[in-house]
Length: 160
Length: 231
Image (tube, rainbow over all chains, first blue to last red; front, side, top):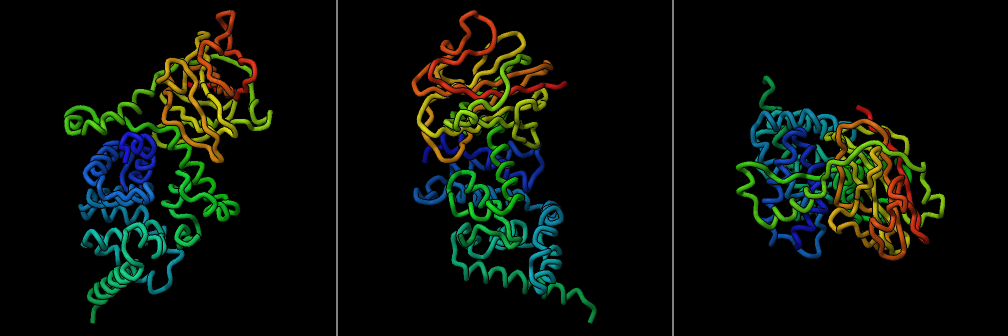
């Protein structure tokens, strides 16, 4: 992989993705961090893969790592997730989605990434599977686990 | 194409990125043909990518910047130049009128948003101008600016000592990895994109009289944007 060419061609695109998570004044610094990560993980890039998809995943993961702080995760949800998926999900999803924000900050990295791709980006399960590099069934299982967790948390919070 | 349409019924952000990078091609064209919103998202993404150059880290952080990346970023940053203001020239989209042999888009980015420019548009000091280019046939491209002080300066390519860049035929516009930054002197500014079938240099478009707008070498075509820089 030609890193110089990669940077020339994709740095602005990476910045656009970063700005989905962070304000403009932090964007440039985070792009630098993403490309440091790219250097570290260059061997994981397959020559026949889509560089755009690979960088999208690396950037998303890096941004989520930076968002470990619960308050920032909640901010992300309120800014993007709460409205971006709400009009299109089915009723059970809407219920789960409303409850998801209650434990958004508690999710581990794998679940959080799927959550962001599904609720923030509005991706289909097929596309999430391609980006994450796992089967569609695995994505479905993770989403089911998210919903179950949301329902359980919702039920637990209701008075008996 | 399955997987590129979000549950909202529109292209996902990733699909937009892949389309802009030429990875999806016709797969997204069907949706874009009937969706003005997604076409606007594509235009905005292209405009942003054309106008933005991510600068290298400064200060302490720069020490941790690997040499391989430093070289790449320095190459990109070196092409962000402060350019003059003012100037005038013939108006309009001359090239398209001649049959679309090549086409150049000019985009401006103000640090937060980007927009595609047309002749007569206003720009502001500090904004970066980026370019998207497309040629039907192979040739050579030089984009120059002409300012109020009657100076010619090179917008693209900036690292060839005035020699025009080779442009390969393409079915879609692509962003060039260089941009110019506008200085704070208000006035008119004209951008001339000159396309020739053979190699040429800045000296070939410099006016013989030593003053005035760029000239057009025989057998070449050009596209001109006249901009107005407002304080």
